[in-house]
Length: 530
Image (tube, rainbow, N blue to C red; front, side, top):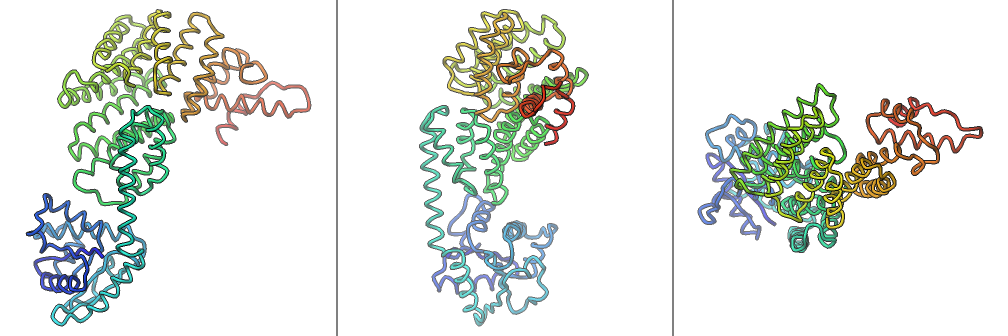
């Protein structure tokens, strides 16, 4: 059984030394501060964190240790204060007294009844370092704890097997391209069995990269929630604190944007960025700022006219910060700078759509050309840029050129979300040239793709565009222009409009009399409160 002895060297050293000697004679694997001169760890705080997390902790109670445990003002011995904080965290994450891997050991001179409540709730052991009185009871208690937890040796072996299995699957996943079916299958397998797996949380970037390449919103959500739970319930080693920031920025923010929950996504992106700043991980800070800028751009798209400028200014400010950081970290010609340039072009396009100032459209095209020179052809950012270039062509009324951009993406892209968005943009280009039949075909395929990926808002947007063109492709009655206007006034969210139309169709099919005029206000209210 692996044991760590936690004590204050100022007044608990003799008792700790006697406990270590007694337990080692009984064959226990005991670690304590007296071993530091032999093992020479690179980081003593990291050594403490690992020992407290992975071993059963014996707390040698003394006056100084109790002061460190109960107060952050005990500055005479910072090491014991830090160690006591780790022990407090370990106790907090265990329910009840029995089975807790923290055992207080009380020498004769300490009154056990005067211990603080954080230790009183645990199973307390008496031990006399002079006579070793209490040794047998302590050994029996450790043995019972070992059996109760499934046996130290038996418990360690499955854990090692689990770590080895996770690492083997990760090695297989990283050997395949992100967009391959093999990588997706392995990512799904890891998420299915990875609850509480710290190795999975450490490899979050690799796994989430595969899930995002396949556009699987549900898988990204499950993976992010799982990793956040794991990281919240364990003591991070040195250098692992920033993992939480990466999960929030690359995982949770990403799926919240696809779920159209922009306000929550903005808060999560800000939280992740602040955590990354705390650990001075500038690369993750830059990614967080860029993600936050993208959210502001989405919010500007749906905001009222007098709010749009606020969101666009915030977007521009964060993009400047992110671009500056990426330039200093990765160089001025890096892919990351190219992604920022693409986002700048998208912002300029939105400003053009607000004002119709030709100079803004020209600036957007120039930014897109800069981004094209920095991004690698065939990658997902490059293909998203092609979709943006098609949108720029639509704004400039270069419809045939725009169709070429998105058609190339549709025929060559390996990323389902990019393909779905390309079909949606091609439908807009086809509608601009009055080719409604082809546009509807593209929108039907795009809607199906978005729904499979879990992008319900995007799917509903495609559905509503079809309904406005020819509702008989979707339901058994025709929506009039007045119906369309009324629904758009009542329900800004296309998901609510779609559900209201389907609710009317369902009710109409059950009526015994002739069809009635739909009460859209009633239907929208009903579906919004279901």
